[in-house]
Length: 344
Ligand code: WQD
Image (cartoon, rainbow, N blue to C red):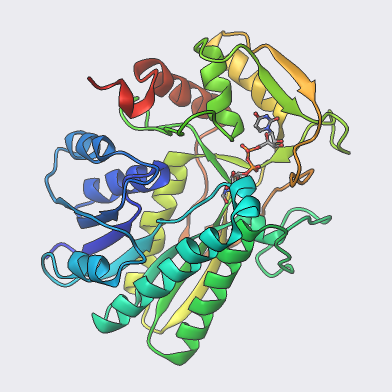
């Protein structure tokens, strides 16, 4: 019988790509989403791409125990949960920390409560590489100290700690995936990243400049101690990240003993802002005009993770290169100039 998986935030950028991979592997899915920063259209397209109807939607907020219970009680018993639902904008978390603690920590607490009530203790949690703070030694290993510098990262680390306590208290199987910078889109161009308003993140900003929706990219600082002075991140293709979730779930389902895993999910290869700009220009043949402006408050010079532990434990490593991230992100942007709102 097919395993049944609950995905919170399954209509979002990473959630929708993961839902597609899991549907294609024959899982039955229940998606809980409040569409705060996502669209039901993404889920329609996921079903069409997978040619599957094994995805049910419960519209609701992860902080609402009744809504979470509705998702658990929708069909047969849920075997495992992937928890994406949460907030992820660093600057917004500084401006409105209580909201971040409420959605990210309280949402996870409510979800874990419902999981206990339903005897479902297998969980993959969306954590972040920003828990390492402002590190000076690279590449980052999971055992290195955490020192989050903003509420977004603090709330994610707090959830990791809450989950550790649960693992010590009972029969839980938990994986915390510390994502680096997911970009790109499904190669079909049918699902992708759909930021509300002006994009905060580099990659959607670049694709909108390429499309003529914005006149130029503003590069936040060229005075970092990196090879060209611009900030370095470990960008990975969102399909590689989606596949990482599927192999993680598989690993947890097949593990005999309760445990908690913490894994970096990245390529291990840091790229500067200018590397990405040039890579995009080369992959698409389109110019990306830019100007260098002041550093963005809260940015760190560099984040680059060692993905070896994920390879050793899961057999997972990122397969797609920058050119593919750029091509697929651009295909999505061209086909959906206004994201999911492009649909009449
Ligand atoms: C990347 C680089 C910027 C925009 C993101 C998420 C956060 C977390 C980690 C998961 C930096 C530069 C950007 C622009 C620029 N997610 N930049 N001009 O800051 O690493 O954070 O990943 O854990 O939720 O927001 O990613 O894409 O914003 O920035 O020069 O218009 O691009 O300064 O060096 P970041 P980003």
